[in-house]
Image 1 (cartoon, helix red, strand yellow):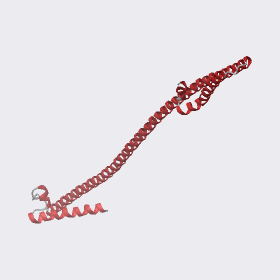
Image 2 (cartoon, one colour):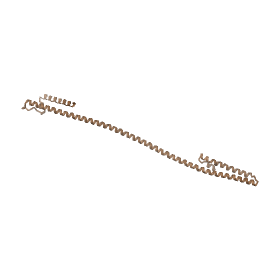
Image 3 (cartoon, helix red, strand yellow):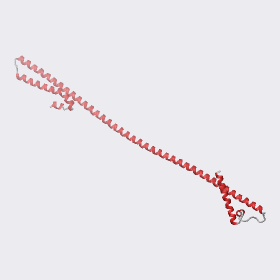
Image 4 (cartoon, helix red, strand yellow):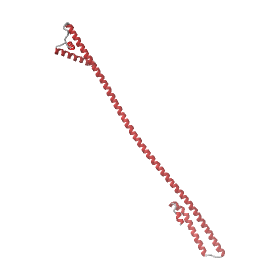
Length: 226
């Protein structure tokens, strides 16, 4: 209905323009359309009817052209609206894709950072494990060395105990010989007592050596050897 009203308004404007031209130029609408006056031999009524027909035809043509122009404008407006809507939709889609790309990039950076932290922690764990193994190996070798030293000291102590036992037996033998011969040699007894005291002192030092070794790391063996 709105478009029909526009067409009628346009037709009225065209009619008005034609009538103004007729009055100003002193020519009929037919003369304006044909470029000259009507044939002089035709009856006046026929000439007026012909002019009216030409004017109506011109009005219909103008109205049809106006309607076509309005339809073309409507199609253009519709196409423009659709194109604008598509462009807006594409803009939203591009914004969404850009945001998704940023999110993906941030997630990739976070994953890489977490991977680096994990790799660093794994490297630290490997180094600590290697250090623990090395420390355990050193402690095992130290314990083995202490056990070997303790065995050597035990052998030395056993030797000292045997020497003490031999000196005790020798002392008894000397005393027995002195009593048998009826001689109580103080010099022989003093010598035997001195030997026995020295042997006991060596035995006591040997017995104390393993404890000293455990605390000082084997320094007692050198002291006894002196």
